[in-house]
Length: 221
Image 1 (cartoon, rainbow, N blue to C red):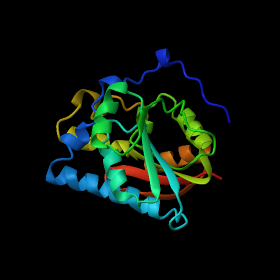
Image 2 (tube, rainbow, N blue to C red):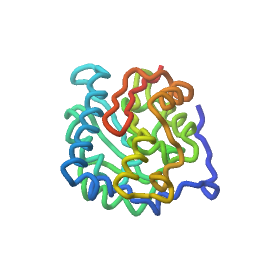
Image 3 (tube, rainbow, N blue to C red):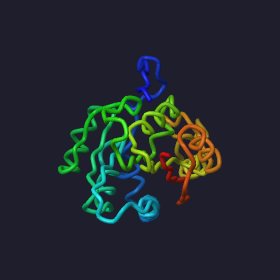
Image 4 (tube, helix red, strand yellow):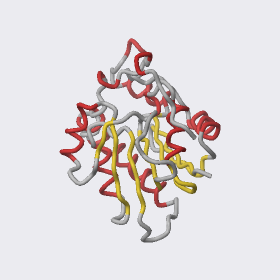
C-alpha cells in the first residue's frame, strides 16, 4: 500500500490553534475530570492487555498525535518494559514540550497521513483523540494499516460526540456551537465508529466505553 499524499493547504483542521493540553491541565485536574481520565487510560490498558501479545516478546509501539506528551507519559507508565514506545506529533511547537515530559521516548514531527515508519514494522499504534480532528480519517487509517505488521493492533479513542457536547454545554463551554469542541471535524457514536473502522481498517475486536469516550482495538489481518 502506498502512502497517501495530502494537500495540507486545503485542510480544514487547525491543530496549531487548538488546546490539546486542556483536558490534562484544566479539565483533568479536578476530582471528576481526573477520575474520567483515569478511567480512560484504564480502558486503554485493558485493550492493550487483551491483545494477548506473546509474553516477553520485544514489541514496537507508536503513539500518533501525541500533542504535548501527557498521553505519552501515561502510556509509558502502563506499558511493560519489553515494549519500545515512540511518538509523533504534527505541530512542531509541541514536540519540545512532549520531549521534556518524556525524555526517554523518541518523538518526531510528522503527519498522520505520511508516517515515516516502514511497511509492516509496528506491533501497536495508539491513536487517542486524534481521529475526530482529521479532514481525512480514512486516509490516516490506511497509513496506519500500512505500517502495522500482520496481527498488529490499533488502539483508538474518540469522544462519543453527543455525550461530549452535552457535557461541554452543561459546564458552559462552546454554547454558540451547541457544545461542539472547536476542531472536532468528525462526530461518532460507538456504533458509527465501529462501522467506520470496520469499513476502512478492519474488524473491531474489542471496545470500551468509559464516559464520555469510545475506545476500540482493531487488528490488522
